[in-house]
Image (cartoon, rainbow, N blue to C red; front, side, top):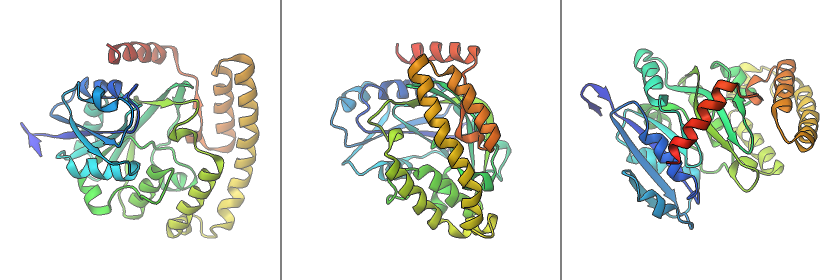
Length: 306
């Protein structure tokens, strides 16, 4: 759908028991400089005060029984009318320029299927997540694209949404599926997405066992794509990654000790950047948040809390 010759964009907010945050996510959508816009909130069977909070805002609320993120995303995309859409977790935020800047990229690059940006991490941790420019081989090694990206709706219609069988990393699996089908993305190197990190009890604090089993399943699912880029997969792939895993394991130990002793992650973030350069996994690490971005984040949080 287009309005006044401009493509309609749908912001789809996925919520489950994030009553304390969902209002902020909605406000960040309402503060977008781009129009026309529709805002859809899919509530996945929340049992807290989420519905009460959501009803305070001019959004399209869709309620469903708790079926998980894959089902909630599918519900939201099927209901949206936009030519482009972006998925936003109810605990995360969009910079006011997010939609405007990403729409410009897709409008001027018809061969590109989705746009993702640099990421500001806030909450339990803070930093600037270092995303790669789009590269399929690098994406096969690790996911450097968050689940929040502006996507052409026709791509969803052609490929489908998230795999409901995956309890973790559904977004990574989705980007790999798109790559298999010839739908590629592009990085907009501007920090326009705010990704909240939690201490515990959320999807970004999954158990190691769950993560390990899910990643194994994803690699098996996309075996042909791996073979295309790693001809002796899985042997060459896992040999290359063995040393990376050793570095990461011991780095996390050092990082945890530093954080507990210092109470600040500036030093550990700098070590993250150093280790990232050593093992070539920039997308896995973050660096300390620059001063000007700290001020921008602080002001923005104040705006969405009003």
